[in-house]
Length: 59
Image (tube, rainbow, N blue to C red; front, side, top):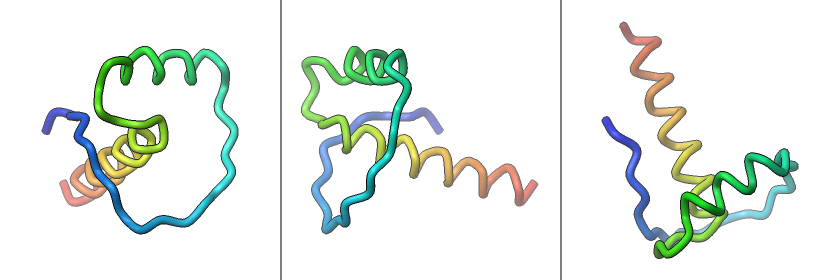
Protein backbone atom coordinates (compact mmCIF):
# COMPACT_ATOMS: atom_id res chain seq x y z
CA UNK A 1 0.00 0.00 0.00
CA UNK A 2 1.36 3.41 -0.95
CA UNK A 3 1.74 6.10 1.76
CA UNK A 4 -0.76 8.90 1.14
CA UNK A 5 -1.17 12.13 3.08
CA UNK A 6 -4.69 12.87 4.30
CA UNK A 7 -6.14 15.45 6.67
CA UNK A 8 -7.13 13.89 9.97
CA UNK A 9 -8.22 15.22 13.35
CA UNK A 10 -8.48 12.86 16.35
CA UNK A 11 -8.31 13.04 20.12
CA UNK A 12 -4.67 13.17 21.13
CA UNK A 13 -2.08 13.37 23.89
CA UNK A 14 1.12 15.43 23.82
CA UNK A 15 4.49 13.67 23.58
CA UNK A 16 7.88 15.31 23.22
CA UNK A 17 10.18 13.96 20.53
CA UNK A 18 13.38 15.26 18.98
CA UNK A 19 13.97 15.16 15.23
CA UNK A 20 17.22 15.70 13.35
CA UNK A 21 17.07 19.05 11.53
CA UNK A 22 17.53 17.47 8.06
CA UNK A 23 14.52 15.20 8.71
CA UNK A 24 12.40 18.18 9.80
CA UNK A 25 13.36 19.97 6.60
CA UNK A 26 12.40 16.94 4.48
CA UNK A 27 9.04 16.61 6.22
CA UNK A 28 8.26 20.31 5.90
CA UNK A 29 9.10 20.16 2.19
CA UNK A 30 6.84 17.11 1.73
CA UNK A 31 3.85 18.76 3.40
CA UNK A 32 4.26 22.22 1.87
CA UNK A 33 1.02 23.33 0.21
CA UNK A 34 -0.96 20.35 1.55
CA UNK A 35 -3.72 20.23 4.12
CA UNK A 36 -1.63 18.37 6.70
CA UNK A 37 0.32 19.53 9.74
CA UNK A 38 3.76 18.37 10.80
CA UNK A 39 2.16 16.34 13.60
CA UNK A 40 -0.40 14.90 11.19
CA UNK A 41 2.37 13.76 8.88
CA UNK A 42 4.30 12.13 11.73
CA UNK A 43 1.17 10.32 12.96
CA UNK A 44 0.33 9.02 9.50
CA UNK A 45 3.93 7.94 8.88
CA UNK A 46 4.02 6.07 12.21
CA UNK A 47 0.71 4.33 11.49
CA UNK A 48 1.95 3.38 8.02
CA UNK A 49 5.19 1.97 9.46
CA UNK A 50 3.37 -0.01 12.16
CA UNK A 51 0.84 -1.41 9.70
CA UNK A 52 3.58 -2.53 7.35
CA UNK A 53 5.66 -4.03 10.17
CA UNK A 54 2.65 -6.12 11.16
CA UNK A 55 2.26 -7.30 7.55
CA UNK A 56 5.93 -8.29 7.34
CA UNK A 57 5.77 -10.21 10.66
CA UNK A 58 2.77 -12.21 9.45
CA UNK A 59 4.60 -13.40 6.31
